[in-house]
Length: 406
Image 1 (cartoon, rainbow, N blue to C red):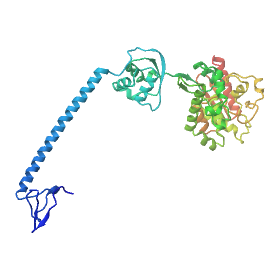
Image 2 (image 1 turned 90 degrees about the horizontal axis):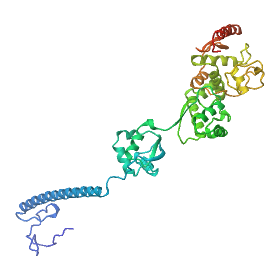
Image 3 (image 1 turned 60 degrees about the vertical axis):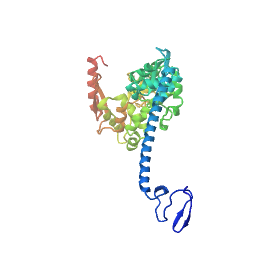
Image 4 (image 1 turned 180 degrees about the vertical axis):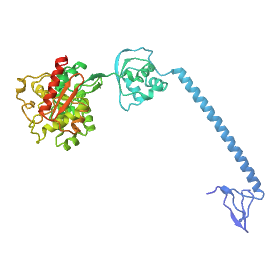
């Protein structure tokens, strides 16, 4: 409702006791209900001109106020900085030892909070300021770093941006080792005794063994070089090794290949372990084929006997490469493939990628026998008949007479 006075109409004219000049009824009202009178248009334009000038004046005044506020706030911050100084930081160089973890997904601010909680930096702000000043801070890698308590924040950032500072326990597990040998390697390469790993092996579910392994880790602790975190326990290390085996199994399509070969995955892993024990390099797929040929019901040459000496040594609980005697061949064990036809109950050692791939995708060929005739070069010859094999065996014996490799 307008704040203009209401008036009574008389003779087509309005009468207003307020002293404001009257207008006729048919004279239109302007914007905002402004009152129009003769000559009022000029005055209205003048008022609009004065309003524009007034707005400009207000804007200028606002700009001045804003500028003064900015100057005032800036000056206030400068005074606060002068009063309180830079973020609290340690002078260094630090003391003691701290193993600090950068976890997956940690932001710079989270690192700062963790560092302050660990007593490494004096304040989160000091660390984030130092990280902002270091271009490498955007690519800090996950891992454990050797730091000290009460370090200068800039020194901490210098350590974290260099991935060579990541602390790990590096252990190399070569192909072809039995579980008992792998445990010895782990015990020598870490701070844990063999008994700690043996205890972890007693709980196969915790280390991630597949159900078809039936609780036996033989063949499933993958041979590789591992970088274990400083906080890793034996169960963590073994779990990491089984996870690496799982990766190799997936790469070779272990389960699909086993089904195609009419084997269980465990049986295919057993073949892979035999291939690892018997061959190397490009010969592995041919050895895998010779094993499958021996397992075939159509094989009347060896009648299902694999006759692999490494399985005899496994049955005897000793190094798989040891020469066997006639007495050894008589050991009564399902692992003695000289006595019992078919595959042994499970893997006899840890196969690597090449052996698993060879077992999953064997070469095509009619071979039933193989023998390495040169131990230095690894030259291996394959035969279809026993007579052919015996000729290659004579070649091997001749090689041994002139070589110290045998």
